[in-house]
Image (cartoon, rainbow over all chains, first blue to last red; front, top):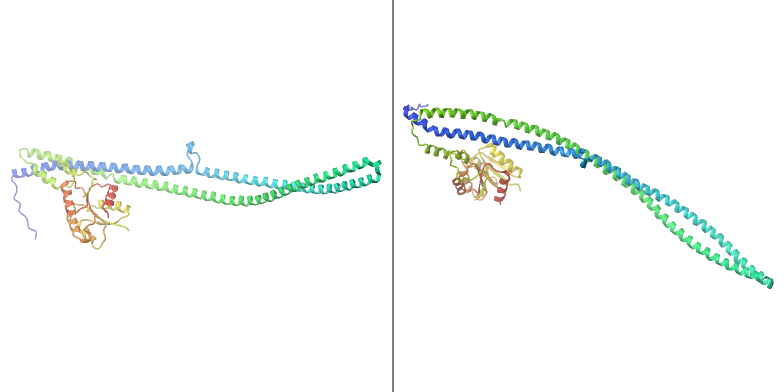
Amino acid sequence: MHQQVKIDPLSSEDFKSHVAQALPVLDVMGTQLKETASQIEHAVIEVCGKFQSMADRSRAGVSGAAELLSGSSDSRTASSVESLIAEAARTIETLLGHTQDSAAVSTSAIERIKRVQEATDHIAKSLAQLDDITIGNRLLAVNARIQAVYAGDKAAGFGGVANEIGVQAKRSAEIVELIRSVSSELRHIASSALSDLQSMVVEDQKAYHKSKIEVDRVLEDFRFMHNSTREFISKMQEESRSVAKEIAGAVRSLQFQDRINQRIGHVVAELDRIKADFRIHCADVTLDAKPILEHLSNSYTMHEERNVLGGAQGEVASGEVELF
Amino acid sequence: MVKTALIVDDSTTMRQMVAFTLREAGFEVVEAEHGQDALDKIAGRRINVVITDLNMPVMDGFTFIKNVRAMAALKFVPILMLTTESQLSKKEQGKAAGATGWIVKPFDPEKLLQTIAKVLP
């Protein structure tokens, strides 16, 4: 059963003494409250600043990436990724076109070499005809000598002519052999060159088709990657806007600090009024505040609190680390 | 191997901030509201590091540390005090109780992780 504790009413002087003891504590309370409000305000300002910085950096990062993809107004970076892909495709098409032109030149060279081969064939046939003529001339020379002998002295000159015909026939045969030899070599060279060119044209065509397929595939992959990147950046822009909205929400929430500031301000104002009132009525009370303030200091756990009472010398600073 | 940290603090926001810092660094985290709660949660669990406040209800930090050092399995576990207390006399008390280190709040996440890295075997 609840027992009522009988408290003897204080005399007027005792009551005044009690009230006077509360005065130094009220002073400290007021200061603590003001400093607390100030600390909260600074912390909120710092947090808001960091939020703003985060939002700005998020936006700047995404904007930069988007600009890189689409090109900017700066002439140094005017080429967007899209225009670079298009330019690469055109350059590759030009290179492949040159390859085709080279193949056409090779094909033309093949035709000309074939005509050279045909020409050497004609030369060979002509040489065969010359051979017949040479043989004929030699026979003629032999016959002429024989006739010269039969003709005796009257045909002495004729023998000289016959000899000369024989000599010319021999020289013709030698020249024919030389031409035959050169023509044969030319034919051999032409045949070898033709074979090489034909192989090269075939290989070049294969390489051209293979390269075209490969290049088309790579360009397609590049376009796909570029589109994927563009989509990703678009999503990041959306995320950045969401983050900014959330930060704005957090900043709104942090405005509790302003309401607290006002409420603390009202409390402090009332405390000041009460202190002033008590001082007037306890002006004649002598009081040693030291023990009261010492007792207060012993209840504190932070150097900022003890600082209000001027007792925070030689203390460890906030954030400091010491290993024992 | 994942390391486990025990965080002891009567402030929920303080536990959240320390837990966030340690989880980002790959720790598993166990939280306790005061010394007695921490002793109950420590039982049968492998703890690699303890971070404890000083001023807590039910059982304060110094008493908690003394109890931990009395356990054979936790005699050498690193214990860091993370507290608003800045008086040198309190720090000496912490050292005498068996704390490995003393950090005055507010803590810097990077410094906290560096300190833990130094004290972990």
